[in-house]
Length: 135
Image (cartoon, rainbow, N blue to C red; front, side, top):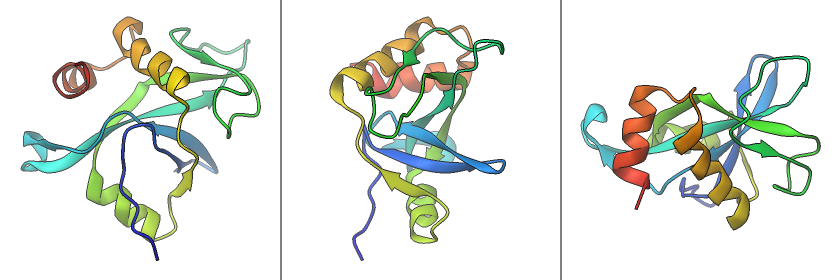
């Protein structure tokens, strides 16, 4: 069995209610003081865009932007969160999380850029993004 290592551009399916949503890993693992310096990553949710429902317009994704996306979607910055890398590895090993194809470079760049403009990014996530991801 190969060991999963959560790295930037990786993508996983995460349970959300009765469905699973695509999540993009935004950085390679870094020690995070709030997790006793355990390695952590930032995940952001990709969600189906329904024009009649509110959505974050900061980054819209279309078919072809990622191999898993089959209809117009948006990056749900309001649900972005920080996770211990070990919890993702354990989730994959337990079969709760499913590994998907890596995010293509142009799409990944657009997703990261959205953290700069979305008004829905929490303060905690914005601080993490600025400290560990922005170069």
